[in-house]
Amino acid sequence: MDTRFDELLDFPTHQTFKVMGVAHEDLPEQVISCLQQHAPGDYAPAIKPSSKGSYHSLSISVRVTSKEHMETIYTELAALELVRVVL
Image 1 (cartoon, helix red, strand yellow):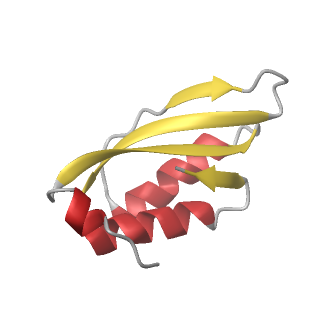
Image 2: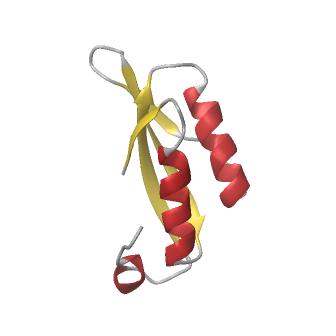
């Protein structure tokens, strides 16, 4: 992944990740578990269901320390089976 995060942000910083995925009870647990591996912390995501209830969006603030750290988190979250999009 080749991004310009290092040009746009001063690290370390808190970044809010928005994760959209299948409306499944395991989605928040999987996302938090993934984050704990790469950025240990106390996470309490805000969860919003879609209008039809098929998908959930989770907003989570994460402390990231570098461009590479942020790219890793995006990549790992996107690789989760229940996740469809990471913004």
